[in-house]
Length: 313
Image (cartoon, rainbow, N blue to C red; front, top):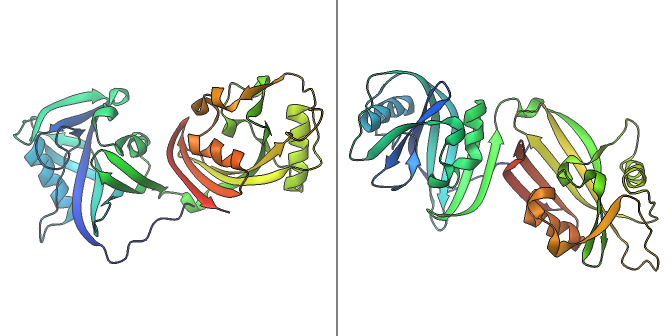
C-alpha cells in the first residue's frame, strides 16, 4: 500500500465538496468568486464553528444551488497544501443522489448545469480533479493529498484507495528493456501495448532471475550472461483486487561487438519514441535508461495514471 504523507505542526481548515449525481449526469457550477474562481466545480465551502461536517455539506448545497439534500454519502477526503504554508485545506468529498427542489443560481455559482459523466469538463476544473474523479465514477472510497505552488501549478500528489486496500492479493511479474547507446529494442508483436502491460508472470517456485531469463528468451529470442535489475514497480488498478509487483531488468548491449539479430524486433531511437504509448510517464523511461536502481508505484484507471511515486532503491 502506498505510504501516505504525515503532516506535523500543520493547522487544518475543514471544507466540504458535494458532487450531485442523477442517472449518468453530474451537476456542476461555475465559481464566480473566492478560491477556484472561473472553474467548474461541485458545491461546498468551509465548515462553520459548532457545525458538523455533514451539516456543512448539506447547507452549502442549499446555499450554492438551491437543492435540498435528502441523503449524502462521504466518498473521500482530500488534503490541499500550498507551498510555503503550514495550513492544510481538508476537503470532505460527498456524493448526493437523492435531493429535491429547484436549481437556483447565485452570485457565487453561475451558471449551473448538468453534464454527462463522460463529458465532465476536467480541463476547466481544478488540476487535481482528473486524478480523483475516477473514484467518484466508480464510487471507490479514497484519501488524497495535493500540493500546489499556486492555483494552476501542482507540485505533488498522492492518492490512496481506502476500501479493501489491505485485502488485495499480489502477483509478481518480470519485464525487460534492451538498450544500445541511444536506442531501445522494441518487439513488433508487443509494440502496440504499454510497457507495463507486456510483462510475464513469475511461476510458482521460480526465482525472479530465472523468470527474467525465460522472459528474455521468449520475447526477444536472446540470452544474456549479465543483466541488471533496475526497478521494482507496484501497479494498482483502482477496480482490480490484485496488486502487480513488476521487476524491471535492463540489458545494455552497447559494448557487444556483434549485436544479435532478433527476429520481429527493431531498434528505435529514444528521441523518436512516443513515451505515453509505451511507458507510464516520461520520468519512468529516463530512470530506466540511467540504470540506477529505483522503486515506483502507480495507481491506474484503465490506461490513465492517477498517481505516480518514485523512491530510491
